[in-house]
Length: 416
Image (tube, rainbow, N blue to C red; front, side, top):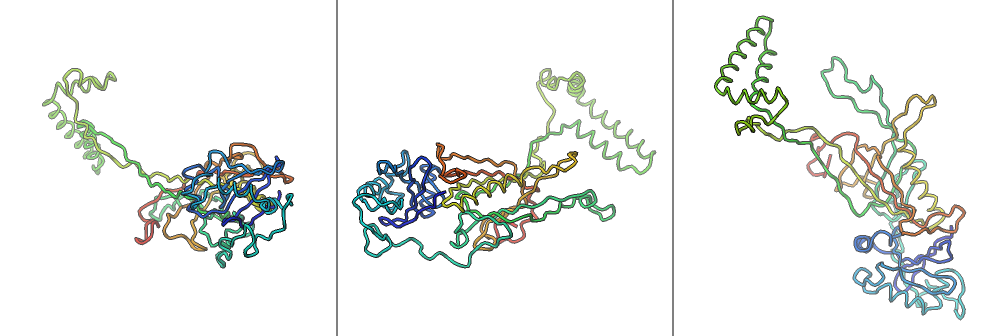
């Protein structure tokens, strides 16, 4: 892959990417606010990491053209100067081509863009990135972009974990008074993946509630069953059954016709016979009842646009990291498949856990999809592996266990 060229120009920090078709993509570094606005208004296909795709340069005729249907003319987002104006200035500046491609153009003079007062020169944005904020990485950790640690930018960490369980470790003891299953054992495997926090951060807590009914006849049957279970000896059981049935028969005689219609309908499998014949139904005693907890889903989408040969390797290894760890593990004898590795996900502020964003329990990666042509066309770098210019990685996770009230321990935290 050709190395990415970065240089200041016309008050912006530009970066160029060489494509296999002989053209050069022109981007400029943008702040997060600009990137979020462009994603919302024009789509993610115009974003390369922390840069915005603004133009394409044809080496043959040395002519720049703006990106169609993109943010080229949006002065509101682009701080008062549109990319249309910027591209026009580039086309009229013969020195631009040397800076962008490293190739001397006709009728140009040597210019150092970083020299104060030089044509097209400017002061680089954020010339001294933050130090001391590198992520706490393990062996083989993957960081994208490469300068994520030194920039001090908040990040999200993905750590693969082995899922270990056995009969004895999971089942509760016979005499410990407990009924809940013990948790599996999770052990970190390999390094972690560190990526920038995506612009959309959401969580969704859900609980299962469903409407249910119990009519008077069912309620009376439940009462009889409960009284029988309270009897301590066979004679008590016989007496309880007899008494309850006698009382039930007395009540049924009071509403004999209605009850008979209901029982006939049940016998022949016609549930609404009572309504059809008598124009009435048994009181259903409808209630909304708790059915159980539900597991939380999490979805992450990352745009991975390599800016150098080393970053291209990192991007491909990150994609491999998720695909490999989510795959079932085949045992040598082929008899069983072991549970895939699961993941621990953590939002980080610097090197510490972010205290204003939700915490996430261990998750299974249920779906991993990769778009190799997010720009809508096939385009690669001219490196040996023909690395794609950009990738879109979509990850869908599901927590392994529900969130319970006991998990919210600190009232000052968002969660847990």
